[in-house]
Image (cartoon, rainbow, N blue to C red; front, top):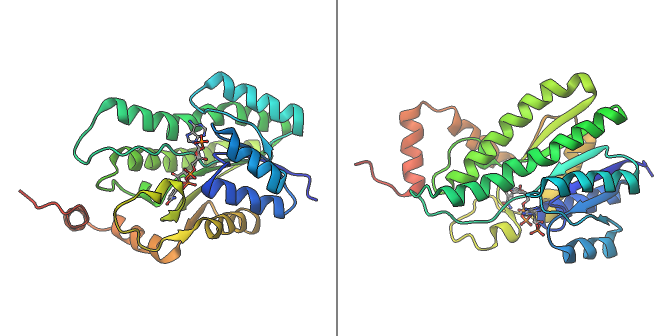
Amino acid sequence: MTGRVAWIVGGGTGIGAETAKGLVARGWTVAVSGRRSAPLAALHRSHGAHPFPLDVADREAVSATVEGIIAELGRIDLMIFSVARKETVSPGTYDYDAYARIIDTNLLGAMRVIDPVVAQMRRQGGGEIVLVASVAGYFGLPRSAAYSSGKAAMIALAETMRTELAPDGISVRVVCPGFVKTDFTARNNFPMPFLIEADDAGRRIVSGLLDSKRFEIAFPRRFVLILKAIRMLPYPLFFRIMRKLAGVRKS
Ligand SMILES: NC(=O)c1ccc[n+]([C@@H]2O[C@H](COP(=O)([O-])OP(=O)(O)OC[C@H]3O[C@@H](n4cnc5c(N)ncnc54)[C@H](OP(=O)(O)O)[C@@H]3O)[C@@H](O)[C@H]2O)c1
């Protein structure tokens, strides 16, 4: 046993749950959070994960949960934020309320968690914070403006925090998955190139976190390389590719 404690927010299902299982297998004590109790209880029964139901929209509940984990498990060595709100926004519409709901969960939800976790990690003399962003944050993807811009902001946030928190012994990393088979992608009605299974994603994350010190854990490799190459193209060429992806003609 390593005696180390991880807290996975969004750990009840999908990528978070598979990462939780992998960490348990490597001897970690794992706390998992999400709004629904049932998936957390299932993970408790199958893998001994400690359930802490939580809605990241509720700032007071986030602080109470951090206190609860410290009371029960003693510390938080690793916090992984693997939360996402699934909401379809029609391309070309910029409805404020829909954007606010998505950004409030995906980005501000992370901020509500990061604030008390950084304070706790400073008190205990260090730790690790991992934000699950997405390759969708590499550039403004057509058809997913709210999701893509929130993930781009999350990558920027992780980059800033990595530099700023180093003196406190707090390591910050980012995970950028491509398409992964989970509830989140189950109803996508468009092609998902390089789609991988959730347990495969979990294995890659656990290995990236425990067996390397890389800032970015991104996969699958070929998809990541293609997208990073597109990001570096001059804008006229970049937008030609984006229009093709979106099936949009230039007026
Ligand atoms: N699947 C992909 O292709 C893919 C690709 C790139 C990045 N990602 C990222 O990977 C992460 C995990 O997604 P996933 O694919 O594993 O989908 P998922 O199974 O739907 O996981 C998302 C988790 O977020 C939790 N959640 C949602 N709103 C919440 C809230 N307000 N408070 C607390 N928890 C909340 C959900 O639990 P409750 O509903 O019980 O709250 C759920 O367990 C997300 O950040 C997503 O953006 C996924």
